Amino acid sequence: MVRIGQKSTTKQKVSAVQALHCIVVLLFLLVTGTVWLSLEAMQVPPTSASDLGVNYIETVTYTASATRSVASPTDTVHQTHASDESLLIATESNCPYRSWQDLTEREKDPTAMAHRHMVDPPKGGRRTLVCCQTSAGPWNIAIHHNWAPLGAQRFVDMVQADYFNNQNVPLMRCVRNFLCQFGLAGLASRQFQSTIADDPNWLPEGPTHRENDAGVKRFSVGYFAFAGARKSSGGSRTNQIIVALKDNGPLAGGSPWEVPWGELVGGHSFQTLSKVYTGYGEKGPSQALLHKENALELVTTQFPKLDSIISCHVVDVVEES
Image 1 (tube, rainbow, N blue to C red):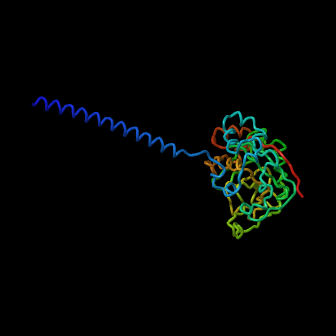
Image 2 (tube, rainbow, N blue to C red):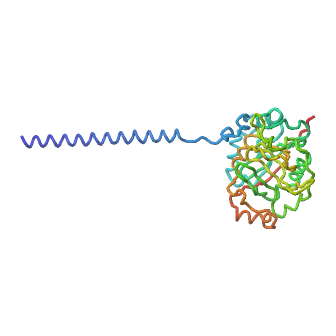
Image 3 (tube, rainbow, N blue to C red):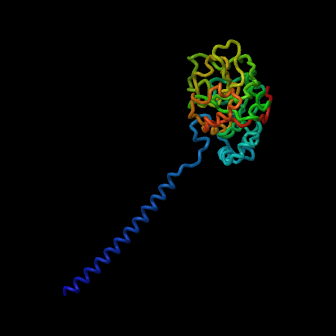
C-alpha cells in the first residue's frame, strides 16, 4: 500500500512539472511576441518635410509632380547621403527643382504666403533659381532681384564665377536656432572683396516691427542676406552670406546689409537646413583661419563635423512684369 501510494505521488509530481514547463514556454512565447509587436509599433518613420516643425513646410505640400522625375524630396535627401561619390559629383541635377516651373504656385508668388512673410515682398522682376549642393543635402534658392538688386546680383555673380565650385565653402558660423554664415574659403576669399552699396530695406525696421499681429517674424527661416560691418557707412557687403535657421525678429531691423534678397524653396531645402551641424556655434573656425592658404585643410582637421557648400549652379532665370 505504501509503495503504491509513493509511486502515484511520483507520477503526480512528474505531471505537475511537465504542466509547469508547458506554462512557462507559453508565457515566454506570449511575452516575446508582445515585445516584438511593441517594438514594431514604436518604430519611427523616416523624416518628412511635414515633420520638421516649420510652419512654411507644414502649409505647403510638395508632390512628385512638382519635382519632375524625382520621386520625392525625402528620397532625394537620402540619395544624396547614400555615397560620398554623389557629393563629389555635385551638379544642378542634385536638386529636385530644376526650373522655375517646378516651384509650387505659392512659392512663385510670395505675396500669397502671408504666413511666411511679415509684409508683402516686392513683386515681379527677375528671379533666378539656384541649386546648391551641401554636405547636408541640396538647397534650391530663389533669388528675387527686386528684393535687393545689388545683393541679389552679387550672389549670382559669385555663383556664375564658380566661387562655390572650385573648393568647398565651409558653413563657418552656424548658431543653433539663429543663423549660418558662410563665404570664406582660403585663397578664394580674395575674390569679391570689393564692397557693394546697401539696398533699401523692404522690411519694416525697428524693435516695434520684430513681429506682426499674425505672429510672423521679420526675418523668416530660409531668408538669405549678406553679412556686413557695424562701423561701415555706405556699404560693407562683400562675399559673406547669412541664412536664417529659424524665424528671427531682430535681423533686418536696422543693419542696412541685412536686407533679404533670396529664400530657400522646396521641402527638401528646409530638410537640408535642419540637418546642418550647429555644434560648434560661435566657436567655429575664425575668419583669420579661413583666409589662410591651407584653410580648408585646417577646417577639415580642426572642425571635422562642419558642413560645407560643395557647389552652386544657376538652373533657371525668369522675368516677370
